Amino acid sequence: MWKYKANKSILITTSDFTILAQEQAKEAPIELWNRKVLFNLIEKYMLPTGKEKN
Image (cartoon, rainbow, N blue to C red):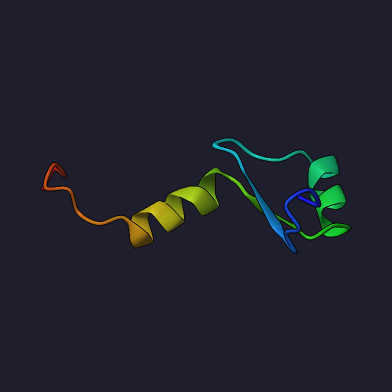
């Protein structure tokens, strides 16, 4: 993060984060996106592809 002079970073997983990871992220400019957050964002912003089931 510092190498690229970023003010904030986002760490993404398709699983979940440990309590320790969540606690450490509170002390740094890091946003944690777990499976639930990721899927909600995909659902909200993905454009229809025409392959979805009705």
